[in-house]
Image (tube, rainbow, N blue to C red; front, side):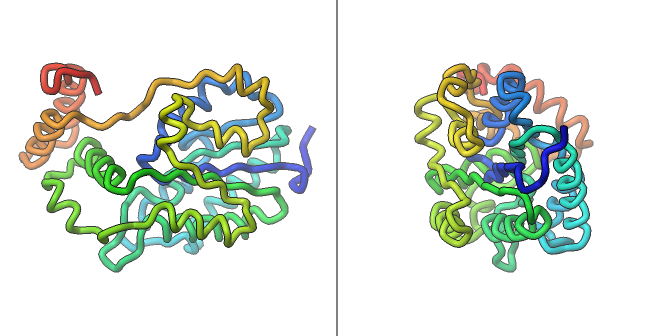
Length: 269
């Protein structure tokens, strides 16, 4: 039976990236059967591939959260959700707001998150909407973003050179709390370290979705996913990124090095 939009609750977990998003998405995938049928989960790009693809161009100015192509992609998602029988839907995709930290013109990831929430409020009008945003120590966040850019985006820069391209601070927590105040408390702000310390990343997402306490006790929380490279392996990959070679060849070497990361830093990553 299809549930009317006004009776359907959609929870958007929008990141930002490098705040435990991959681990939270793994948790949702692993517990999908426990949450069904009342709660449908769509982690990462299972439902939002076209939307996140359009959002990937925020960094170069080719699109913005208000661009017609982004709106069309979001509208497709809204129509799909409207057809579901589940009363609650969790969408976890940090890349709906793009993956870049900032643009030289000054726009930051938090600006794109703000614009994405404004888009959702418009396109998904009629649904009950909630948002979950995580934040973490900002220096550690910057270093984790750099690590990911070296690992996944073939960045050849040193950390200092990479860091010099971005503002002195993004203000993750302040921007998230400003959004919480602006959108009538529908935005829940969570310090990543608090949940990570307890080994229960994603608890806030489940609580906002209305998961009952007895069900929460049955949830399996996975080990941390997509962890940063150790310092020696990171430096190896960074220097590898500066060599002229095909991306496919580079990726094979990186994958091999990561599989034997204990040879670099004495631990797996």
